[in-house]
Each structure stands twice: as C-alpha cells, then as structure tokens.
Length: 381
Image (cartoon, rainbow, N blue to C red; front, side, top):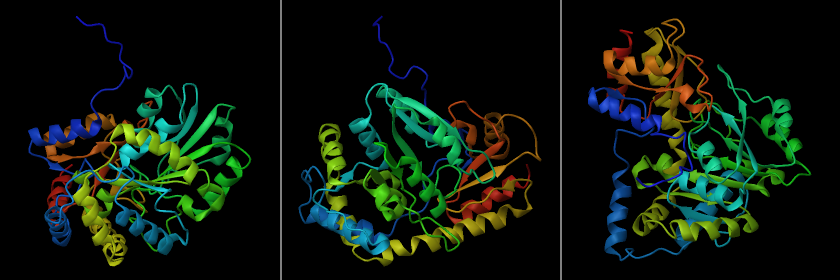
C-alpha cells in the first residue's frame, strides 16, 4: 500500500453531491444543488455557436478575452460608478470557485488567519486549510444571520490576513447593509487585512435593496478581491465561467497563480458572453426574474408546516422545520428525499462544527412547475 498523507483528512464528498445523488436514486425533485432546471437564453447559445464558427477555438489570452474584460469594466462603471482597468485589474476565471481558490492561494501563507462567516459556502474553509492557513469563524444565527462586528474585532490577531465576505449570501439569502460596510471599514482601517468578497449573486437582490459591493467603498476597494460568476448571471452554471476584479497590485499576484492553475478559460464562451452582456438589459432584468420566483415559491409554501426565513437575495430560501420535529437537519433532509421525494440541503453542512438550528435550504431557481410539484409534496410533511 502506498503511504499518502492527506492534506484534507477531514474532507469527504460535498453535501451537494451527496444530496443530488440521493435525489437521483429516489427520483426526488431536486431543490438542493444550486442550478436552474431550465435553459439559458437561446440567443446566448447561438452566440457560442457563432463564436466557434468565427474561429474562437484556441487559447484565450491568459487574463481573458479583451472584449469581455472591457464589457465587464463598462458594466461595473454603470452599476457602481467605479473604474477598473480591464487590462490590469480584471481576470476571467473558470468559475467563481476557481477565482476564490486562486485569490486565497495568491495571498495566504502557512499560519495566516482568515475570518469567515458561517454558515458559509463550503469551499472557503478547506481551501484555507489546504494552504496552511487558519480558519477563524464568526457564527451567524437565524432568522436574520446578522454579523456582530464587535465579535469580529475580537477575532483579530497579528496573524489576521483576510476576511471573506459573501453577499447576497449562500446559503441564507441574507445581505450586507451599508451600515455593515461602514463598520467593516472601521475595523480594517490602518491594517494590512485584505478582503475576498464573494459577490456571485450580486444581481439577485430583492425588494428594492441596493447591492452593497465592496467596490462602492474606496477604503475597501483598495484591499479587495471581488469574485463574480457568469453561471449565476446567465442560468448556465455548467459553463464554469467567472471573473475576479482587484486593484493592479493584487491582480498581479492573482495572475501569478492563475497562469499555472488553468492558464486561460473557454474561448468561444468568453466571446459569446461579451456580445451578450454588451446589452445591459440582459443582466439588469435578472433581479425581477428571480424575485418573482422567490415570491411564487414562498406563496406555494405558505400552506406547509415550514417557517420561511427572510430571503433578501440569492436564489436560496431557508426554512425552519422546528414545528415539524426535532431530528437532526441531516436526518430530516434525507427523510424528505426518501419519504416525500424532495431534496434539500441541511444548513448545518455550512458550519465547520455542524451547528444545527433545524434549518434547511431550498433552491428556487427552477421551473414554476417544478416548484409546484415540490410544494405539493412538502404539504404532506
């Protein structure tokens, strides 16, 4: 037998894969993993075919298609009134998760501490540990998952290197307010602490709220990597395309890792996305699209025994089952699949300590008919 020492000994298959596999085995409606069950815009797929026919089939430039980076820069300027240099401050990546990994790999050294807010997207902590960093956790609690910035300050040590933000947040659907951002500015002012802002759901924000990107605040912008995802924006999660925005000094470090990780990403899709997003309506209308989905799902769930938590952004709806039973959320989620035919995600999976508040997460980025069938089954719980 080969003697191999695992770098992530406590890590197994992700909860998303586990639940999706179980859903397939039991022919359950899959509201667990975060992907749409409907097609993306045919105009977009036509543009991909056109790009292939036009010869965009070889390596793209390492940092990304120039046209696409320019479109992104224009989009940022329209949305946030901020200028980023497309040549030196925007990098196209193989999805948001690769951008997160690369930003961390570019900065984190053994012993560096990174503060995360849990429940958290499941790639953050394993990546930090893989790089020899230390994970410092501030746990958030339902129903609003509010950040206590005084407690965050107490996590600071001389080894604190980075804070990871995620707004709108996966899995909770909570968002950061302007007050949150101003308190964060006070905390990091005068320090060398960097920020990794996971903003892949930036356009999925509801009820007239404004997305509080770090890009809106000069004190944060100068120290931040911002990660975005075309998969979330274009209903095409399988394309695995995203981008990272950062000041030139940080982008230089990011690209040092990026070039030896994936080097460059899908060329025809980059060209197609650039042409598609050159029309602002193709991204401006997504908030109203998903807000209608959220409202419809909440309406469908109103006569179930689940208590729905606030959902201010993302395409995830969290729900408490406290009035139904007190079993572990992992057991409850499995039983929903095997006995009722609906797959969800237990929110304890997003905590390093598996903290269980009896909350599960639904994905409502589905056809209305899918949501209707799921709700009908959930009324029997």
